[in-house]
Each structure stands twice: as structure tokens, then as C-alpha cells.
Length: 422
Image (cartoon, rainbow, N blue to C red; front, side, top):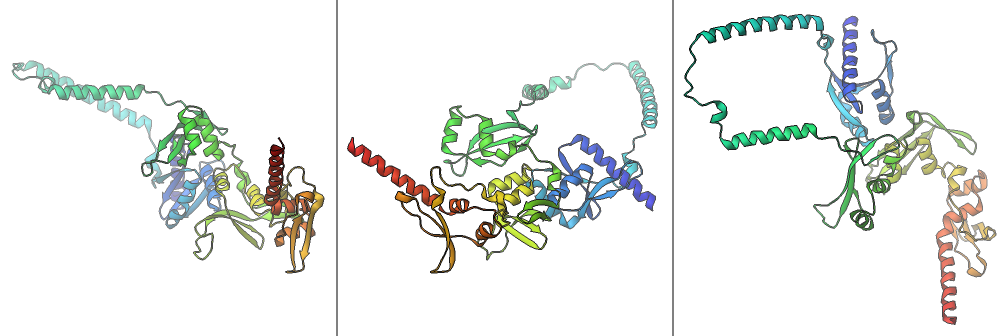
């Protein structure tokens, strides 16, 4: 029984190897009884996307154990959409459970064919001799070609010409090649059939159709005037498709991140859709991260979702960007800067005695003072306890919009007075 199962497994892997040569860019999903299986590089790739464990399996004809990923048949509806959303081409295969069907005894088949061909030749020769003895019938009946109507003959000739033209047709040259070597073709703009005012841009990458993106009116006009090329439109509407991919290793958990009190271990990271109808972010896609007993989630932007599924940023980078302030990371506050020319000495962070809350404000001198804005607990902790944020960064986070408005108002006032003097 064990030997029989081993032979079956060898047959399944042989099927995988042969199909992989024909479809190298597809993930092959084999149905085997009540389970689905993936092998070798497909198993490793799928394990990252589906967050499933890969096991090693030893087979008689393989030097090293092969990678194997398996899940029950009833979980296909859960896992297949994840693979497709991540940009993978998936081919579902029916595994042949009889390995001997895959074997082709070439020598024996050749002998049989040779014998059959010889006997057929002898029979045919004998028939020809018999037919030669008989008298030839008088040609009172027209040939099949003469009997056919002219229209039918013409349609057959057209079909033959079309078939020849199809064979001679060369493959379409790519409009661009990405940093990952993927070929972009069929890039074009098209008008919506439901709303003629809307136009969309789309293209194909390695033959796979991309989801159409709604175009700005300015981009459409520039494209129609040939002032904007397909590579430029790809860069604007599919930026993450053009970026270099990070290694699959960066998606293997756990991973470590430098925190204010030492290394932070990321145990789990994935994407999910909020299903709680009572929550304000119901129906939105969110990032989920688990670090020990700490669990966090945040609404994911479209840009970050595309970057995650296109594998151009690592989970560690997404954690740093979306959860950095809650983890009190110094890198999370480096993006906050006061407008140029503003003196940081005017920043004030103090507890408001009227409501006992910590607030930030700024004195701009003769340009006026900003209002007081309450700061979050995480920002207060980063400022006072972890020391990973500065007063200037906190002020920039909460006050930059107000400060910019005040500065522009003063500039407009000066320009108006100067024009009146002239």
C-alpha cells in the first residue's frame, strides 16, 4: 500500500513538471481526492499569500524532499480569490491517480506502429491492383469540386487565406518592459458604455488584462494629442506594477523591527475586509498586525494595497508606515516638518487646565498665534516618554495646515498693499 501511494505521488509530481514547462507563469492547483495540493515553487509562493504552512515530502525519484502545500477541497472558495487578487494566474488541474498512464514506452509503440503501417501498405497495394483490373467507369458524373457552388468555393478559399494570415501574424511588440521584465502591451484609453463622459485606461501585462483605471480629463486630452505615452500613463495609473519586486523571503514571518525599547517582533501580517456592519470602516480593506499579545488594525489606502499585492514593499515597511506612530517609532515622525522659515522656538506643548488635556500651539510673532490642538496619547508618549518625536514634529503634524493658511494670508495682504501704492 505504501509503495502504491509513493508511485501515485511520483506520477502527480511528473504531471506538475510537464504542465509547469507549458505554463511557467501559472500557479498549478491539483485536485487530489478531497484536497488541493501545490508543489515546489508554487507551494512556496502560495504559502506567503495564503499564510499556510509548507511541508516537505520525500519521493523515490527525487534527490531532495519537495515542498508541498495542501488544503481541504471545501476551502477553495476562500483561498482561490486571495491568489487571484495577489495577481497570480491560477490553473486548476485534475490529478491522474495512475502514474503508469504518464509513461510512454517509445520503443514498443514504435514497433507496433511499424508493423501496422507495413500491413496497411500491403492491403492498400492489393486493393489498387484489384481496382486496376476492373474497367474504369465512364465520367458521366462531375467531380465533387465541380459540384460545389461558386459561393461555397469562395468561402473556403477565404477561410484558407485567413488561416494562413493568422499563422504568419507576428506577436505584438511590447509597448514597454517593466523593471521585473514583464511585457506591457495593448495599452489604450476607452470610453465607458454606461457613462460616456468617463474614460478609462487599461493595458495587459504578460497577456493578463489589468483592471481599468478612470482617467483625468487632462490626461485623456494629452493622450489623444499624443502628448502622453503609454509608459507615462502606466507610471501614473499603475505605479506599483512598474516597481521592482521585493524578495519572497521578506514576506516570511516572523520579522523584527527596531523599536524605542528594543526589537519588536512581527508575528503575523495580512489583509482583510471589515465585515462588522456596526463599525464606521465597514466594507473597507484593512491591514492586521500581531506582535506577541498586541493586535492592531488600520484602514489600508489603495496605494498601500496595490504595493502589498504587487509585492513591491515588505510587510515590515507597511507596519512602519501604518502603525509606526502607535508603536512610537522614530522613523514614523520624520515626515513631519514645519514650513520653511518658521521659527520652531514658538512651539508650545502644555496641559490645558480648562479640560486637563495636552495641547500644542504656536506663536508666529507678528503673523499671529495658532489655536490649541489636542494631541493623541500615542503622540504624547512618543514626545515625553519614548523621546522618538520632537516638539517641532508634533507641531507640524497638528498645525501645518493652519500655519500655511496664516502665512499665505499675510503674503496676500502685503501684495495687496504693494499694488495699491503703485
